[in-house]
Amino acid sequence: MGLHEDLTAIVPDGVLSSREELIPYSRDASHFQGKLPVAVVLPRTTEQVSRVLKYCNDHSISVVARGGGTSLTGASIAVDNAVVMSLLRMDSVLSISVEDRCAEVEAGVRIDNLNLKLSKLGQIFPPDPGSSIAATVGGIINTNAGGLHCVRYGTTKDWILGLEAVLMDGSVLRLGNRTLKSRIGYDLTSLIVGSEGTLAVVTRAFLKIVSKPEDVGRVLAFFMDIESLGRAVAAIKASGIEPLTAEYMDRMTMDAVESTGTFKFEVRAPYVLLLDVDGPGEAIGRRLAAASVILGENGATGIVSTRDRDEMERLYTARKGAYSSLLKLRKSERDVVVIGDIVVPPSSLPAVLRRIGELVLADGVRVALFGHIGDGNIHANIFVDFSDSAEMGRVESFHTHLAETALEHGGSVSAEHGIGIEKIGLLRMEYSSRHSEKALDIMKSMKSLFDPKGLLNPGKVFD
Image (cartoon, rainbow, N blue to C red; front, side, top):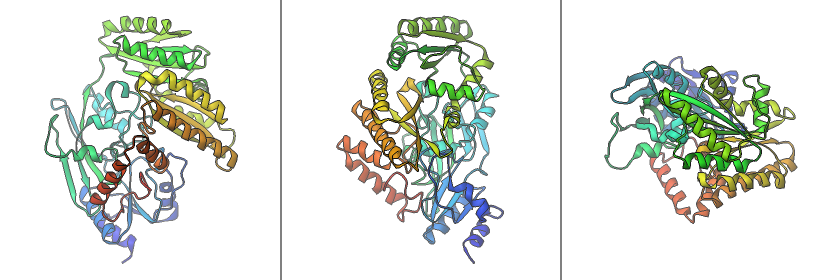
């Protein structure tokens, strides 16, 4: 039998092979064009995942695991003749225990669907990437995704209690468990989180959950310069106010959001800060007032606060859709948006944001800025036409200078989008800047131990 027949024997009614069926799996949310998969497999069980991987290992066929296909660095597309394994059919929420603060779910569960179920019990799973409507549990585990609530809750790694994952040879690992504490040797769970599918295929997870905020209020503060906005965020945090959300957008991003008709900003200014505070209902008004005073003292030219849930939801949705909104501002259909995803210590934000403004002018690029400013995460969204070699050179220069700026201020070249294809060179740059190239050698040794033939998601993270 051939490949498709063999795979169909393992996963009946779960193998795609026609060109029309395969084309969507050659792209993800990044600007990269991957190779057409040799087949797409949609398993329903861990046993099927195990058998497919063993078969591909025995026949030296590469495998790319895929969730919602929302990677912005090309992590979920094939760079060689590979089988793409979609986990979307493994989408069951197996159990939720408020008492244990734990949800057991399959890898294909979408984040918004999970939170819809949890909300009925007064709970949330805090990681909330902008793509949460499509992103899956397995996908955000593989990328250690963040989101708008990172300033309060941290990233995905902080919310994983245990995993079920399958190695390339078909071996099934069950790591960690549903308890809040567990010290049983090396932390292999944390090793797999953020590994971008290069070590194992995640099939199931024990997730930590937490009670929903009792009540939430929001302040929109507008600023004439980015340095003032950065100082204002620092002053808010220094005051003891712990934001639930601290996001910012520049004018270009606000214009893009308004162009979709989802939200209209009341004040015309170059920058806006979106700040959420939470707590008991009787305390929200006092906390909004205190935050507004601090923002005003630090240069805000317009301050608007609200507790209207519908209005807050509209803006929350608009901010999560900021990246896709920017696509409406392309000068031509050839333009794409490349995202710089750096992070710096929050104390460095004023200097870093000022430097980014200088780089935009010096490198002559068109950039929209937004990001999770509360935890120092800056998204520089760079418009580029890949058919224009001069423009490509300017964009590559800016991207490199952006990464260098992050490293100069004690930050990192990748905050939450991962390495994928796009940031392989920047990963080397970061470890070289630390004089820690040996760390990359150790990572490659780990990869060889988990996947001796190098068949799991090849071409990602490393050369």
